Image (tube, rainbow, N blue to C red; front, side, top):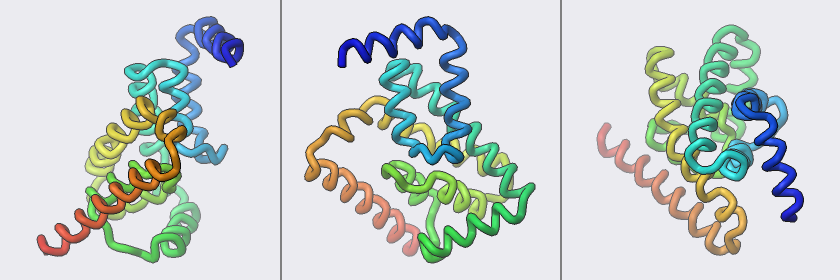
Length: 180
């Protein structure tokens, strides 16, 4: 295992400035390659360290969010397919921006589906990008810093973590109902 780690570190060092660019581009290709966000964030922390890995993940996920916004607005068929998935998976559940941000913290939740929620909730591209980037920062930091430890946790600790996120999600829903 140590030889694999050394080999990966040598490749990163030899790639120089191109390695972060390739990593960011990988975030853009991630949906096509069916790679979960958490996997790339963990890889970013492993390959580039916490600060750089988080920074590169935030850039990559922000660019992916911007590209997704453009794609669903340029190609109505893509938007319709995403809306069908949204109806199938989440049954057109009404959510707040806070709930979407909490769901972004959960591993393996469909990133573009949550982006579609943000598109529907916001009035402009600028507002969408503001909330999208805001919702990317904390998951990028958490999964870059703790991603490996989260995936290595005992199952009961992982369940406790997910239960806490579900509790926060429910709390935001109840607060939203009281506010209306």
